[in-house]
Length: 552
Image 1 (tube, rainbow, N blue to C red):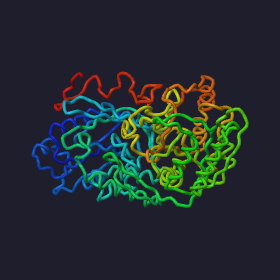
Image 2: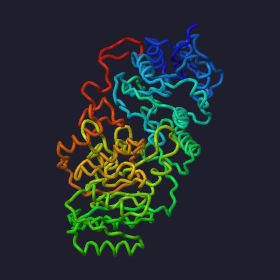
Image 3: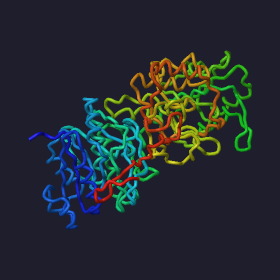
Image 4: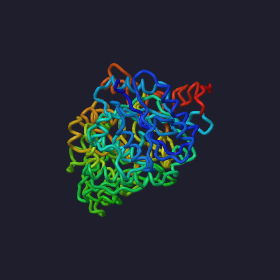
């Protein structure tokens, strides 16, 4: 007997019969690679389920829950790869063939996952989830991978299969343990699974399975403990997400580098001297081991420098004033400030900012140091960015996206919006972050060559972030560090094509800019995750519960 390449694992417990029929039919329609459908009936009470499954299912005499049934399915699987499919979900036509193609293209793959959409109660497809390439920090915050997932059977068995006590969060737990083992995750940016919005499904209402989220808390706590990350875990602000507060030494010194010329402006109806208010706001930080390094142009008013020294002195925080006498050159001012700084950890900060969350520095420090562990093969964290809001509370910075242009992700979104796939509600890897609030280490800063001398005005932070990633480091954005950034809301910052070409030519000489944390199904030169035309998640046809093909 030929060993199947794929074993599709489905634990079954009292689904709507029509939904189960559609699930079974979607697997039966697969073509290309050899496969088997391993079904475990977890003591369903509806006699119609037994009739649909016939003799091919493994039958449990006692309902043991999703973990027990999934482990039974894993034990019975013969395939080299196992594919996880819920009893009311549907495989896209050709899904297994597309997985096989991805596996053949990357022999090192351990986990292969795809994009997915949802099946509405009326049978139509909607809400496509266009995912990034693997984002380990984000996986700690929530299971954004969900469907469709294929795993090398041997790797899943070696990781312990599905761990008892994780029911409802068993897939998340398995993915975290696979990540810890150094598994290679490969993304197929195509919709290969359709997640059913059944009445009891999380796809319909995230409150349908509260036990799953409670188990998820324990899953994340256990993962952090195994990874040697000292942290507290609590429920996030949005269902299915988790907040990780990492332990940070209170005496860890941070040099805050602030380039300025002492400019003034009107915010919220009041005139302010930006750098004075920026420094004053940071004296309220819960992390008090700060040193201010203010790089001031020669024409900075003397009274501004006096105010800065007074504010830092009142807070018992050291301040170093660095005079800068050359024509404006942001990169050189940052590099001069770093040269004068005494700490090994650097926070580069624009002068037109005001701290919102007093725990911001702590959150960034935690990611920069302890966040680098627990993701073998995916590099340490080399830089951390923050959530920045315009004066009106809308989003100015949610991480960079390099998708045809260099942009701020989801620019102008409401400040508390979770974003597509809850991407603004969790800490996640990004292609880059703005230098308006960027934390890094001196070692990484020096290894990256500092800020580029040939980019005095624009895109110097883009180039720096690309250099950091080229060194093998990850860059992480966190919503738990936040500042107001009082710059103008115009999308045009005056950047020139020459500056864009300088960065693009250095990093992508023969191709378009590539952002692993975007998705090729999204429209180029858009920061709002707009889908390409014709890729709304609704195929030109779909199968109804009887398996009949119908046209949309």
